Amino acid sequence: MSKPRILVTRQVFPEIIDLLSRHFEVEANPDDALWSQAELAQRLADKDGAFTTGSHRVDAALLAACPRLKIVANMAVGYNNFDVDAMSAAGVQGTNTPDVLTETTADFGFALLMATARRMAEAEHYLRAGLWKSWRYDMFAGGEVHGSTLGILGMGRIGQGIARRGAHGFGMQVIYHNRSRLAPELEAECRARYVSKDELLAQADHLVLVLPYTSESHHAIGAPELARMKPTATLVNIARGGIVDDAALAAALKERRIAAAGLDVFEGEPAVHPGLLEVPNVVLTPHIASATVATRLAMARLAADNLIAFFDGRGPLTPVNT
Ligand code: DGY
Image (tube, rainbow, N blue to C red; front, top):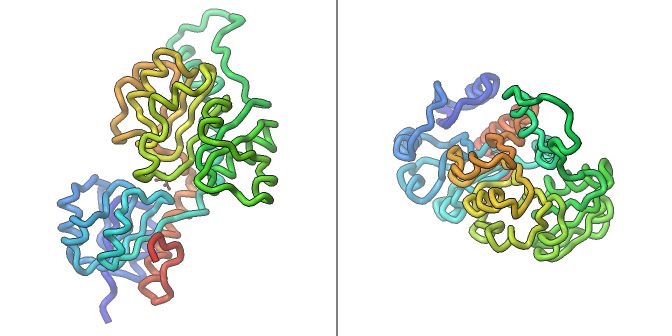
């Protein structure tokens, strides 16, 4: 019997291509070119499955061009690049990679919070530019982290990881807002208190966004929300671009209506709003919150295992539509 045909849409670890090749006939992206949607559709037209990243949309137009397609395995926990309803209507299974990146991503969220509050990027640029001439009492004086109030918007696994780091490691008062409240034992373990979104905005010294990107969370942080934050507050986004209105944020940072921001994700990335590139009080990183070698390998392995389990008839391991 012939093996199922799989398209790997971006470059991944060679050992993952080897693993997939033991089970499937694989077409891999040799040079990591970012294929257009049209080229993707053409390459997928004769495939049974796809190994994707967030770089491509899987929507009705693509699915209509790929009649053999049965499964798309995303190497990411976020799957806002999937039109899940269109996939379900076309009978196409979608999978993601939860859990394996939780702690690594929470580490990064906390690192970005600290770098932002303590103005590390600004200070490094100053030093590299040869501007450091002497000690000054207020040189790069930032906001306090320990003992401050940590606000978390979106309290899934990664949000809980950040809450634990803040509460247990840095003695922070943790408040959160989420669609649904955590079970009391989980709230106790995270030492986190549920508040309304308005209270979260008004009380947080550091606000970390960890919610999924959906039509409801589009611009969850825009000009009105930024206006409710403390002028000394920092905002950290490790979730998805589009949750923050980047133009409104750039204006708020420029006018110092909030103190600083740390951003790993952007509206329309890899493009970055020019206003964000102009202000000094923002730390910018290129969507790397899950980027440790071990975690990226675990994510790729889980995406591959989803394809293998699906075509073995065992069913997908981490489905997003059932
Ligand atoms: C994820 O897993 O969703 C990360 O943001 C990488 O895309």
